[in-house]
Image (cartoon, rainbow, N blue to C red; front, side, top):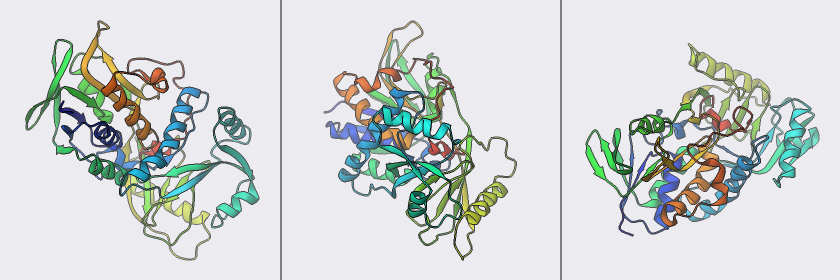
Amino acid sequence: MTKRMIIIGGGIIGASFAWHLRSHGVDDLVVMAEALPGDPKQATSGTWGWVNGYADDDPDYANFRLASLRYWPEMIRQIDGLEATAEGAYIWDLDETALPKSIHQHQDWGHDVSMVGGADIRRALPQLNSIPDQAGVGRHDLAIEGRTAAHAMLAASGAEVQQVKINRLIRQNNRITGVETDQGTIDGEEIILAAGMGTAPLLNGIDIDFAMRSSLGLLAYTQVLPPLLEHAVAGVDFHARQDQSGRLVIGGAFTATADDDPDPQTSAEKLVAAMAARLDYDGEIRLDHFTLGQRPLPMDGRPKIGRVQSREGEAINGLYMAVMHSGVTNAPLAGRLGAREVITGQRDPLLQSFAPQQNDHHKDQIRSHQPDQQMKEQT
C-alpha cells in the first residue's frame, strides 16, 4: 500500500496504530511526536501499567477493556521485546459492600474475576504484613511496562519516527491534507491523531470542538529489590507492583491527584515509607525516583475512537482520532480495530459507543480500575 499515513503521537496508542497499520500493508508510515516514551512529557512514560477489564456500571466499556486484555497475549507472541511483567492482580480498594458488587457485576458480564478470602490472598502475597479479609482478583490481568511496550511496537512497525513539535493540522475544506511542524510541513492521505492531551488543541485549531480534562499523578519508584510482589496490588489507599527491573512502583489512592502538591519529592518518600511498613522485608527500601504524569481524559472518561465531524455535522476526511485512558489497557484493541476501520471503512461493533463527538450518559459514573490512571497521574 503506497498511501502515506501519518500518526501524530508516539505513545502506546500511536505505537499500536503503527504496528497494526503495518500489518495491513501500509509501508509509507510516519510517526510524529514531540515526546517519545521515556520522556516525562509523554503520558506513556508515567503509566502504572495495570491491564484490566474493570469499568463499573458501563458494560460497553468493560467489555472493550476485557477484549483488549485478551488480545494482549497475542500481540506479545508476535512482537519481539514485548512482554508482560506479571499476571494477576488483587484489589481491595472499595468497601466490603462495593467490592463484591463490582466483582459480581463483571462476572455477570463474562469476566474472569472472582472474590477470594484472606488465606488465598496470603498465599499469593506472602510478603504483605497486613492482609484484608477479602479481595477481588483478576487472574489474567497483566502488568505491562508502558514505555518498553511502546518502543517495541514502534520498532516492529518499521515506521519512520520524527521527533518534532506539531503546530497544526492542515485543513482544506472538509479534508485534512497534512501536518505543519516546527521543521516544515508533511503531506499525508490519512492522519491518525493519537496525541493524548495534545488532541484537543489540534482539533480546536481546525475548528472542531473537543474538550478534555486531566490530572497529575505521582508514582514512586524504589531502588532495585529482590522479588517482593508477584502480583499487582490495589488497596484502599495505595497501589503497588514490582516492575521488570525489580523496582516497586507505588501510588496512593486511585482518586488522589498531585495537581496541588507543592512537594512531590516528600510525597513520594512517604509513599515508599508507607509501602515499606506493609512488607515483610528486613532490608532498607528507599526512593530511587518519582514521576509525575498527566492522564488524558475525554470529558466523559471513555475512549474516543473514530472519524470526526465539522461543526456543521459533515465528515472530516483524512482524519481519524484515538484518545483515551487507560492507554496501556486499551492500546492493543484501539489500534487493531482503529487501523481496520481506517483501511476498510468498516466500523467494528465494539467501537460503536466510542465515537469522538459522542457524549455518554456514563459520564462521572465510571470507576474504571485504571491505575494507569496514575499514569502516573497519580496515576
